[in-house]
Length: 272
Image (cartoon, rainbow, N blue to C red; front, side):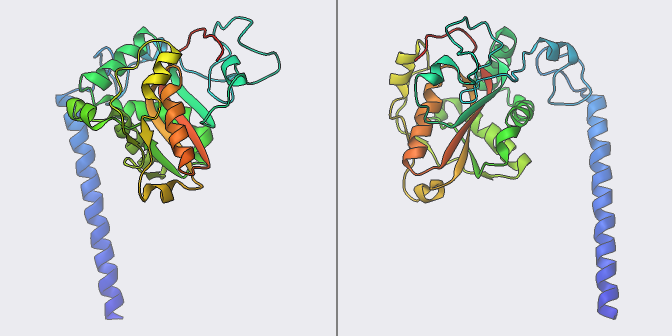
């Protein structure tokens, strides 16, 4: 009986301490907001919550939604022209003419001048405060594939590029998202074996740049086998990077590969 009473007292004391810590953290956050008011990530205007954008900047963003290609996520609402959609089919012209290595790709926003400024700041100018906000966008855009996902991984950087940039923006996003939705995070599962140049130019050029650039090695192959993997990247342009990552993962035995990016380049393309 004495043991039970002592244990109850310990639990009560622990609860009281936790409550005090929570209150102290809340007060600390409010005090910090008074001293350093949270600013919009995009325009630096005042916002209520840190790591967010203001209503005006939010209005300038173009969120992607249905209807879209059921494979690559290309939105049918864009100005594609009559040659890019087959009436009654939910595949875009590109996906009708090729077998994709990945099973589905989804993106949060359209790539344009407004979204470009944010992603450039995050990717090249150490604006790491964008990571939390971008992870929220990924969570919204990718909700339809999370239930089927076994693990989340980032598109890897080559070690030389990583040393130069000091961080992998995709790995930051994938870690936050994995923790938020409670899915395993495997940032070292896929490696980049070629230090490819910056991805510019048309599809054929981009495809050649990243051909054979990704690999699953060693014991990681067992982790991949028969698993559904969600691949995180910042921008989907032609799909060349996503395609080659998915090929490497499928070769290692992955059952499915989903792709989730913050931005998606939207422009008429010649069907592949």
